[in-house]
Length: 325
Image (tube, rainbow, N blue to C red):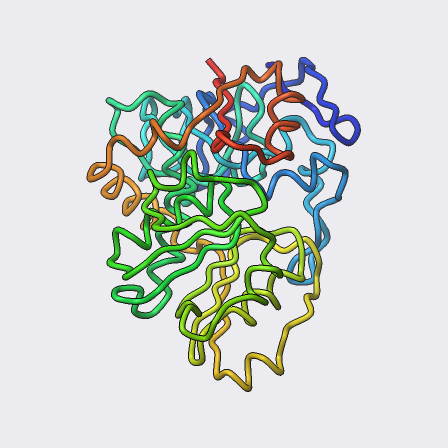
C-alpha cells in the first residue's frame, strides 16, 4: 500500500509498505481504507520535528514517530475488515486513527474511536465531524455557557468551531483574539467581535467591565497564553485550556487563579463515540458549516505543502483536508 513517511522535519516521502490485513486485527479493531483526513494542530509539532511525549509513565508508541502514515489522526474511512460488533464491513466511519497513522492507504484502528456518519456526506466533508466532536465535548463541560460572555484565544480551525458552538449554546457575546486578522471569516462562526492582537496585549488592556466570564485558550503549543487568559478573566471566571500539551509540565498562574477565584479546566475527548454522535446531530442543524470551515484540499502526495500551510496561520485559511481518494 502507499503511505507518507515523515523522514525528517517538514519532509514527507511516499513509500510502498506492507498493508495490514484482517488477520492482524485484535478484538475491537477494524481495518479501514482511508478516504479523507484532516490536519490537526496537535499533529504540527511532530511535523516540525518534536518527538511524541510519553503519557502516564509509558514510552511513546513505537508505531508513531517515523512510522508510515504518522502524524494524522482525524480520518474518514471505509471498513474493509472488522473484529467489532459495532462496525460492519462496508460502513463508512469518521473519527480517530488510534495510532495517529492516517496518511496511508489502509489503517488499523480501535472501533471505540469511530462512528458511522450520514452517507450522503462526501468523505472530505465528513472529516470535520471529528474536530467538531472534540469542541462540543469541551464546551459541554464548561458550566453555564448560556448567557455569559465568552472569549476565544486563537482563531484557527478549532477556535472557530468554539465560537460557533458557544453561540449555538446561548452565549451572550463571543469575542475572538488572534495575531492574524480573521474578520474575513470569524463572523460566519458567530463571533460578535474579532481582535487583531496578541493575547498579552489584549488582556493587559481590558477594562474591568469588558472582562469575559469564560476564556477558551485554543492557541496551544505555548505556555504564556495561560497567564494571559487568566489575567483577562472576570472574577469567578472559567479558563478552559484546549489541546494536547507540548510539554510534560506547564507553569500555572496560580496566584491569579486564587486571587480571582477562577476555575481552570482542561481535558481530552474520552467518550469518542458519544461525541461523534453529538457532532452528527450538530452538523445536521448547521449543514452549511463545512462550506466555511474547510478551505483547502490537498492530495496525500502534497502532504509537505499541506502541513507547511497548516503550520503558518493566514487570513482566509481554516481547515486543511487531505483527499485520500
